[in-house]
Image (cartoon, rainbow, N blue to C red):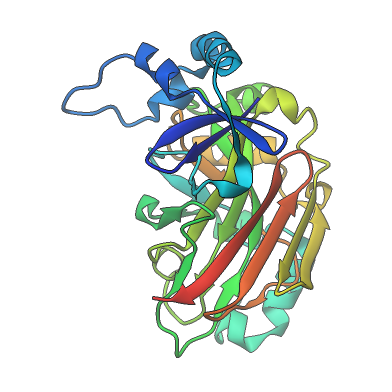
Length: 285
């Protein structure tokens, strides 16, 4: 199943290049009152909503995917957990390029650990990237984003993948400089998620997915998730050993080599096999 969030917070079931508006199925979600739950209610209740979503789609008029304003498919992520330098060749390029490491030693992920991006950085592909601090280098980073579906607290590797609801493409946009990663990567619009949320049953082997990113048609990044230093299951084990992962939380699994600068006017094309492809425009902030 592929779901998208579009236009004025509508929910769509995606079938190829067609989208069926299934927003009315959300009426089955439990009512939320203050204090609001720290989960994404759709992701938390997706198993019991699937039937209603599929039934609603049967009577919905198809819309053209290309005509819709695509928002982040995850509306209420509690947190965004990200894995730095999780591809060996990216670690090597980061150590070789002074503009990336900014005179700092780039440590292996096993030593540096994970970091958090602010949820306020999340946007959808149609919202685009607004460059802030234009005088500094800002880079693109394509990543597979795993979306947590059930509460995960100090889980074992054996059951780690059971906690994933699905996947989407993530762009971890980064301004280079001496500050901590979380500051430089949490700027508004610097976490693009899209184009759709693809349920885990549609991606039977997340450890063998091709990633590709182009800027203005020029190939920049190309890799496969089999090249991850710490695989997806082990990332969940690692993250959940420090904090509880909740439905709707986003796990950015790391970017491969080929990161490079972007500027206003650029167009990014990003794709991941089994997940989809999206185009994102870059503008001045």
